[in-house]
Each structure stands twice: as C-alpha cells, then as structure tokens.
Image 1 (cartoon, rainbow, N blue to C red):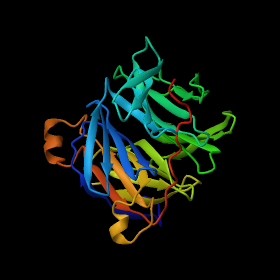
Image 2: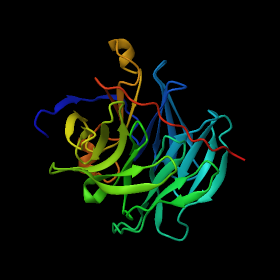
Image 3: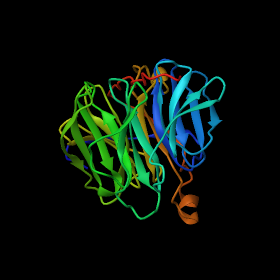
Length: 309
C-alpha cells in the first residue's frame, strides 16, 4: 500500500453466492444495481429502495452488459455473442457473434462516453494464451477490433470522466494500461498506467470516479484499490472475501441512512470460482455483493446508444 493511502472496510450487502459475480453496474435512472453471475448464466438486479433482489436466466453465460438508451433493453455480452435483452419479456435479439471458431469468450466491457460499447475477450483454454482481443460495438451495431495488444484475460475497461482516456488490462500481467481515446474512436499513446505491487492479487473490473480516480477490484487480493489519474494509489477498501471481481459507484444504498450523497456507494461483486473445497469452506462470504460508503462521488454510467432492429 502506498504511503499516505487510506483504507476502509467493505460490508456484506447480499449473500448471493455467485460462482463468478461480475459486471457491476449502477443504473442511475432506476436507482438499481445490476450484476451477473457468469458461470450461473444469470443477470441479477437489486433495488436498495426496498432491499429486494431478483435474477433473470440467460441463454448462455452472461459475461458483461450495458444499459441502453431505451431503458427497456440491456446490451448483453454472452459468452459467444452480443445481443439485446428485453427486460420486460426476457427475449434476446442477437447482434453479432464474437470470435467464432476461437476458444475464447466475451469478458469485461463498458460503454465509452460516446455511447459505444467497448469490451474484451478471454482465452478459454486454461493456458493463458494471448489470443483474445478488444472490440468496440458502434452505435450502428458494426463491430470493430481495437488496435490494442492481444490479452489472455481482458479486464479493467473504464473511461475517464471526459472520455479522453481508456483504461484496460490483461489480468495475468498484473498491470493496468491506459491510452488516449478520441471521440472519433481513434486510439493512441498506449502506456502502462500502474503496476500492482502487493504479493497477491490481479487487476479485475474497474470504475472511475468524478475526480478521475480508477477503482479496481483485485482478484485474489481481498481488496479494491483507487489510483489517482497519475496511477498512484490513494485509497483502498478491504473486502472480506478472497476474490472481489468488479466495482461500481452508485447509491444511495448505505448513503441514504448515512446522510450521504448519491453515487458515493461502492458496490463490489465477488466469486467462489477457482476456490477448492477447503478455501470455499473458509471463505463463507465468497460470491456475495459488498458495499462501502466513500468520500468520493461516481460518474453516471454511459448508456449504449444503439437500438434493436
């Protein structure tokens, strides 16, 4: 932990026991928190107004998703394809297959500030081959591969508040990268943003706050770490489970009762995947959702501006 950095503790919100909780997303329009259990092939939704949670079955593993301009729909990244999901009927509408014929699946993703969906894939062979990629689904539903290094496990996709910087990582490298990201979609100046220095943990899902700080869930490290725009750690949140997987800044879940402001609640998903029987027995909260109230404020999640046919 960097000198002068502050840390606090997250608390369990929901003991959902997700095998691979991911995709933490706060919907400012509805005041609800969404996430996925990838291996369980389920989309989850939690409403802090009444404390109720519900889930939706998916046709295959749901790796990532995005809110849409039409609130009836989500853009979903299933293991093999992108599709629209109708929250009212449960119907899906395929958009495009992703990396057909390659042993990969869709993984992490976020919308950029222009309303396009940027996502990555991961190697499914178990050998950490750098055969995956980073892609952008444009508003006209065209798909393009981004000129970024091929990862084994894409993660940490996020955008600065002004949209001019994209963050991403290949998790096994234990470093988070940044690049200049232009409004027209151009990418330049790819560089290392920060490297993890703790003995444990790899970078997983990220979210950006209104001050430009990057909050990163660190799988295997029981923590979420905030890095300032310069890549230096400023804060961390200890999470009482081994594998925090993704984060979102939302609220008010705890903020209402604490007198806080909206978007100051850190939501953290987690997983029990890859834990052996002994580790899972010891890590009784694995797969739950955790929260902490921050002194920072989030940025409303951009919505995908494309639409179903």
